[in-house]
Image 1 (cartoon, one colour):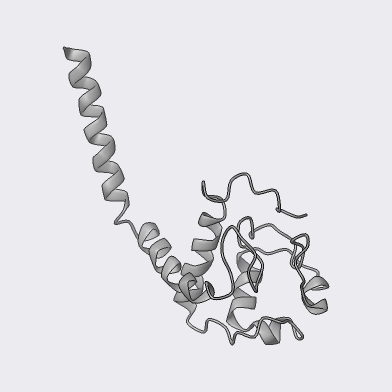
Image 2 (image 1 turned 30 degrees about the horizontal axis):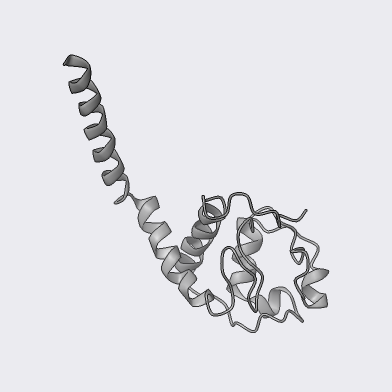
Length: 138
């Protein structure tokens, strides 16, 4: 009987910790980033290429390197790896960061929205939804 009560108490504690974590600043920032990402959904998705390439595994991937995706020459030759710094610069102003890119979006001007979006892309890119995708190009 004591073992059942201990396990039951551990389960209750785990549920309380999990629900408290949902209201943490990081969880709130992730949720805000997910909302900002909805603007990207017209052209992008996490798991599938659309007008723009998929975003699973974006952080750490060389720009313009998803196999089979028809990138602009400018993006194929961008010569950098996506990380928080390069994403911040690109998302602020895609057309000035990579002149000739086919991404015709004016950018995310709000610093907080960009920060939340990058956090979302980083975390979602390593989520269960994205695990196992083979297109994490070098």
